[in-house]
Length: 613
Ligand code: SRM
Ligand code: SF4
Image (cartoon, rainbow, N blue to C red; front, side):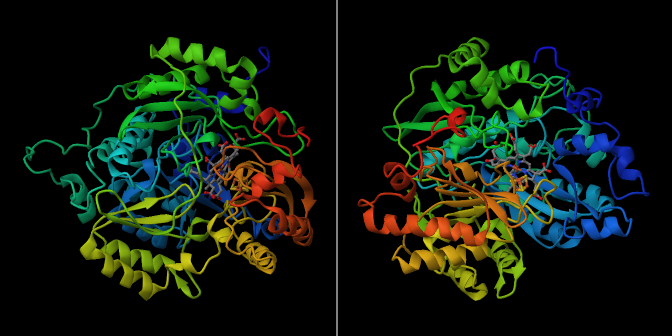
């Protein structure tokens, strides 16, 4: 491995002059709807993926036409909290330049699909105009930092969100390439604007946030000198372009971070490269248990690749979050495998070198004390739907958005409904890691108006969906994802109809079971920690994985390979039957399958392909 040549992406990064490459020239080239090949790798660091419509790929090939190129844009939303003005802005861009839909992702971010090359620059500039960016939404860097979306214990959630945003800012690449290429050199410090948003748990707005909601981010805050740029907007050329954390070639691979507040593991912290589990004692956030080395991606038939749950590395004080995170990142930067991208994630670095070695390295780089982990317990990894009231008395409504797709569907004007809500609502929107949306910080006096809008548009559909559907997720897959082997977002809803029928026949309709589907083994909907995981193998065919823990604390296990819908239902039917008959009180489906030795208990990624009952 030491002598193996570095992967081609390393060459591209190294030669890119801090992620510039020839992106500007590629954008200006009118002859093709695509970017130059090397630039398709670099554009990811800017939050942009080149794609082509897979539904028409073969037909265009037959007619000797260029593929139907367009771009996916991913906007970062650290902690998933965005202002209603930011939502309205994304809605506007989606309708002007994209495919008239917004995709809420499994990492609390937003995606637009179908943007043509000629509209890319304007779309990115428009996103930034509301102090949101797309930098580092993809690429070999730290991605959108997740934080629990539902702020029930407001003070703790507020503190955790602040830490998540601070870390997001700390790990944002320093290159000016993004601002040069997309914003004509203007440097907007979006992360700082996020930090400036102040106490977002309160329906009373901070000065900056009120301006964001008015769409007026360029006017100074109260008491600020008119001649000075407002906080969050730095003057041109003010920074040094060194990449002190990432260096010239950034990380060997993507890197993901999340903060969790037990008992809800709604961010799926064990699936992250780096996680912070809040430890709350006597109502105070005292620090975090740090987790390292989680990841989902694998390749069919390559047992050297596997999903892995993160290890709990130890407890750190709150003030050590940034140095510890930076040490984790730089250790991976220096020791991650740059020769083989299938072996380049932190999970393999840790499995190859050992957790003890990794802990020592992080402790010595950070100077922090990494103590024994403190105790905590997770009870679930989904969202809590409907109306919830936090400890400050504010209301939050979690809306079910099936597979994260916001559009105006036949009989379900979801996009229009959310637009109307965004115009009327005085708090925030929050995106959940389970692809849903929370209308957040609704004051008592405003609740009736929100209820009226939800009813008028008929979008409060969580009461009509079964718990199974409410605990389901599907990745995007066809027609946009270049890696899809089978349908996912477009197929799971109808498969759930069938599974619902099976469960209803056995009196299981009220059972929440986590079910997640992806169109390929990369694992974008985190299928290997679902009680029922379905992973695309080929058109209409899936591998079936069973038996993960309901709180995302245990992996599932391969159960059937390469099966179609009829075979999926045939495999599940008898298992539901014995679950209905033999389950213990309160026993979850995944736990039942493990107790009955139908599938093995799998906690270590290395055992994923080989464990037996
Ligand atoms: Fe993902 C690649 C969509 C969350 C693991 N993912 C892709 C790409 C960009 C395909 C590509 O490389 O060409 C997909 C674009 C599809 C499209 O048309 O939009 C894509 N991933 C998504 C999203 C939109 C799925 C969704 O339905 O929400 C999620 C965006 C999250 C975000 O806002 O940043 C998304 N991807 C995930 C997750 C879940 C998570 O992060 O918690 C995972 C598993 C966790 C992990 O990283 O291990 C995930 N995506 C991958 C992988 C496999 C990585 C690996 O280690 O092997 C790839 C492929 C790759 O990187 O080579 C991938
Ligand atoms: Fe595409 Fe595979 Fe991710 Fe689904 S899991 S979005 S098919 S890369």
